[in-house]
Amino acid sequence: MDVEEHVCQSCGVPMNPEDYAEGSEKGDFCSFCMVHSEFVADRDAVKARIAERIQEMTGKSRDEAEAEAEDTMNGLNRWAVG
Ligand SMILES: [Zn+2]
Image 1 (spheres, rainbow, N blue to C red):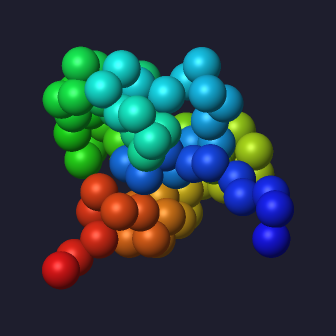
Image 2 (spheres, rainbow, N blue to C red; image 1 turned 30 degrees about the vertical axis):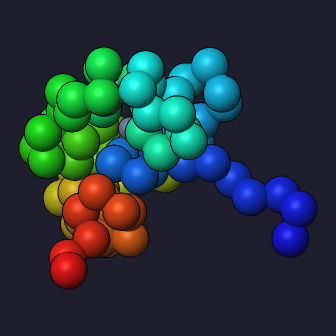
């Protein structure tokens, strides 16, 4: 596979190199979630961001979008358990 979509490992948003946070050299995190190598968006903020994107894209209810946001977060490095 040559093409791997780069998504933020905190909020799951697809990123271009200019979206990478400062201090996130491999581009693991976006500038919404991380500033100067420190996380600035907590779990609630990230979940709200993902849910809003889902609502914009799909028109789902907030509850459905938040449940889907939880699923998304479970697949991202920042929130992975263990
Ligand atoms: Zn992010």
